[in-house]
Every structure is written in C-alpha cells, then in structure tokens.
Image 1 (spheres, rainbow, N blue to C red):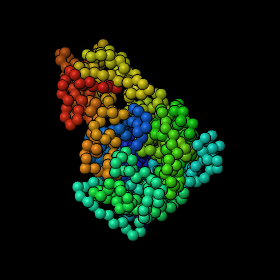
Image 2 (tube, rainbow, N blue to C red):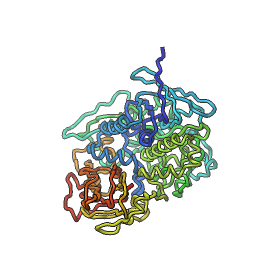
Image 3 (cartoon, one colour):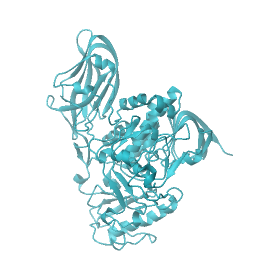
Image 4 (cartoon, rainbow, N blue to C red):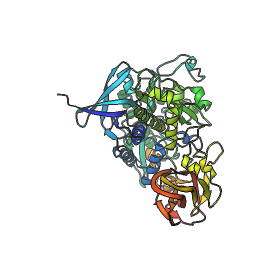
Amino acid sequence: MRETRIHECDLCVVGGGLAGVLAAVSAARHGARVVLMQDRPMLGGNSSSEIRMWVSGSGSRVRHLQETGIMEEILLENMRRNPDRNFSVWDSILYEKVRFEPNIELLLNCACCESDTADGHINSVTGFQLTTYLWHTVKAKIFADCSGDSILAELCGAEYMVGREAKETFGESMGLDVADRKTMGMSLMIQAHETDHKCTFTPPKWAYVFNTDEEMNNKPHECLEKINTNFYWIELGGEADSIRDTEQTRDELLKIAFGVWDHIKNRGEHGADNWELDWIGFLPGKRESRRYVGDYVLRQDDVISGRQFDDEVAYGGWQIDNHLPGGFRMDAKGGAHLQKVRLNEPYGIPYRCLYSRNIENLMCAGRNISTSHIAFSTTRVMATCGILGQAVGTAAALACELGILPRELGEKHIEALQDALMEDDCFLPGKARKIAPLSLSARLDADYGDASVLHNGIERKIWGRDNGYYGICNRPITYTFDKPTKLSSFRLVTDSDLDREFTEGNPNVLNISCTLFRRLDYNYTTFGFPRCMLRSFAVEYLDESGEWRVGYETEDNYQRLVREPLNVTTTAVRLVPRSTYFGETLYNTYGSVEAHIFAFEVR
C-alpha cells in the first residue's frame, strides 16, 4: 500500500543545490512557508562532498564582483568555521542554514517524480523518499525548480530548450550554423594528498590505460604543481543525452579517472611518487541539460555588452566558458576543447528569465534559467546560481504575500522586489539601494573624515569608486536627531574583501587542494579570513541624562551584513568601530586601524 504524506506551503523548492538553498532560505526569511525537496542526502549540488567542486562566480573573473547577500553570508561562515575547507563541514553548514531556518521543511533523499498540473497551473508535486519509503505530496502556491535538470519541465509541460542554437536564433555570432541538441559534458573529480613516503597505485583492470600524454589527448594534468586547476577535463556526456545517459556516462568517466591517476602515478615523470589517492567521485558534476523558456531569453550580446535591465534581479560576470561536447575525447592542444570570451564588466539578469512562459506558478533558478546556450555558459557557475536562487525566493515570498503570480509581480512590483534584494545586500548593477528615511532626516557626523558616502546606496568597490567610508577604530560615526526619536534597529555593511585581496593564504571559498591535492608545504594550501572585516564594534545611544549607553555590541563579528534590533528612544546614536581581523589575532592598536564601512543606518 502506498503511504503518502501531505505538505502544504507557500513555496515548494525542488532541488537543493546552492540555487535551491538560497531560494528556500530567502523565501523563509521573508515570511513564506517553504518545503525544500532534495533528491540527495546532502545539500550543495556540485559544491557538496559528493562532487567537490569549489564555488566560482563573477568575482572569480572580474574584480570586486564577489556575490553578496546570503551567498557571501554562507561563504564567510565557511571561511570562519572551516579553515581547512573540509567538504563535509561545508555540507553541514549548508544543512544547518536550511534545517534550522524557521519556516522551512526539509525533505532530503526525496526525488520529485510526479506533478498534478491543470490549465497551466501546478497544484502539487510528489516525490519518493528512499530512506523512509514514503511518498511526499507538496501543495504550494508557487513552485521553484532549482533541480538543474528542470525535472518539473517534463512533469508539468513547461516549455524548455536543450542544446546549442543556430546563429540566427538569437543573433549570436558564437552560435552554430545549424542547431543541435549537444551540451556541455559532466566531470568527475579526484582527491589525493602528498605523504612523506613512496605510495604505490594499482589501477582496476577495467580502467583505461593512457601510456602517453597524447593518448590522454594532451589534457593539462600538471595539477600537482598548479593549485588553481583541476580535473574538469575528465568530462563526457555532451554528445549523449545529458540526463537519460548519465549512468553510462558515469561508467566511462570512472574508467577515465582511474586511468588518469594511473598515468600520473605510473606512466611518466609527474613527481607523484609520494602522492596517495583519497577519493574519486562516483556522481558526475553536471553542467548542462534542460533550460526553461521564460518571458525573456538572455543571449550572447546581453552578457558581452554588460547590459543592464529595468527588471534585473541578479547579475553575472563569469567568462563565456563553453565546454565543447566532445569533452575528454577532444585534443586539448591550444585549448581547442573550450570556447572562451572574457567579460570585463557585470551584466544584469532580468526577472523575466526566472519564471516559466507557459506555467503560471513555476519559477526557476540555477543553471536551468531562460538563456541561450552561449549565455548559459556564463550564468551556469554556482555563485551566480546562488544569487539567482535568492532572487527567486524573495520574489516568491513577495508574490505570496501580495496574493499574485510571478509574472504579475514582475509587471507591477519589480521595484519592490529590487528594493528587498538590495536591502538584503544583493548587488544589482546600475542600481542604488534606498537609504532609510530616518537616517536621511538625521545629521550624520564622523569623528574622523567624511561619512556622507554611507548614503550613496552602493555597497562595494565598483567601477573605479570605493563607495566606502574609511574610519579609525574608536572614532565614532554619529546620527543626531532634532528630538527624541524611537529607533527599532540598525543596519551595517562592512568590508568582507570582495576581491579577496587581503585574505591570507589561498582565498578560494572551498578547498582547491582538497578537490585536487593536499601538499606537505602548508604555506601552499593555507586558508585565511578577510583581515579587513570589522570584528569588534558597538552601537551606542544617548540616554535621557546625556550618557552613552550600549544598545548592541560584539567582540567577534564575522559577517559583512549586520542587522540587529535596538528598541530605544534617543536623540543620538553612534557606531563605534573597535578592531578588525588581522590574521589569527585581534589587531588592537586602537586609533590607528582603519575600519572600512559601506553602510550604517538606523530605522
């Protein structure tokens, strides 16, 4: 007998990669009741310990474009709590963000496999949970497909695209003369470590044998020496069906992966005598499959020109990074297996790319949004997928609050959505966050320098402007009111080093050396925390007797965005920066350490 449990919510998120995690968390924080259905035992998608790819995004290619909002919140949490960049600890941080967020019900190991859809409207979806052998039916007002493979598209009849378009389809010079259904492939990662003794490796009999570099198609396998590279080129599936043929593709990738390690260890001089294999992935990291058709399809000219949209709710900046379908079977000489165009500035991603054109309550976030194949090759990276998820979650919560559907939200309330995203520390190119009226009505003074830049609404270095206030620790920034004023909270944005210029060691958010190799030379693989982060500060208010009282203080802040209640009535309130992070210890030379702040407001 089939036992089914019923769940009712505002938003059902299908897929628990970074897009799904941020969609669920952002919607829940905006008051929506959320169910997140994930078919794996952990969250994180390609960044999880099952696949072990580090998180890349716009900031990896264009200065000062590191993604903020919930994405930066999670990355800073990981940098703080996971200095060795252990993927299992990363799994636990993502699990914690979802499992212990009020308003979210998490269904792990639950594969979505049915949809009840009528007249272009999804009523419910049903998944089977392998650990409990139960069926779960989720009824929701809005559904967000963050599965990567667009699992809901086939189940509910939503329009979608697969493959590479012809030049004429979207007017793209990088398109094909004739369209096809080929995609980018999927990859398996390898993990190993260096020891102080010689280690042997005996490959399985079924592994491929690559006696020479030429037999391995000249793939760039100098990973023992170059930390910022990996085995992305152990890639197949682009010439097959990237969904239906995944099992066969995995089998081929395993034969290649063990053959590659055999080549590095046993066939040629690679300096690998003391290296020991720890892990080879059994779940391929997928790049591309189905893409939804929305009210707009992002295309090549949009991303290359850095186009800004009236309805933009996210941005990208990763290069056009088009892996050709042949993957491992293509000769890599001269980078012939890749098609790349570096971008010099961010481009906006419009809200119209984030919901289905023909299913009225279906949204999408991640690598399955409405783009051409060429534009997809830049939007597909995980940090970009994450901020797309935050945009979708925030939009869904706002639509549920207003009792409307996603398209109507975009047509009538796009500014409210953009305001909410920027309030939550999301960057939208060409747009400035609105300053709280109460802060604008007060007099803003600083004991050191000019703090007026705190009201410009741009909260990062960008386009040659710093946009921040450089203060000195123990020298306050003060708001003064004409009469006693009730304050409910404050909002602070401090510098988390979005270009990772002042982070000791390797600044990448996940452990490249864990994905690739861990060397005995720990100076090569150490990981730090942004030294410019404002670690210790107080927000003080003037009481009735004219004495300064502490309304909020912390000695160990490690987040860029801080929003806390005050609940005081006062004629003045001030921020007193005390110290920044510096290596492993506090840098306590008060009066000389700079505090770099992008926003301080009271409400």
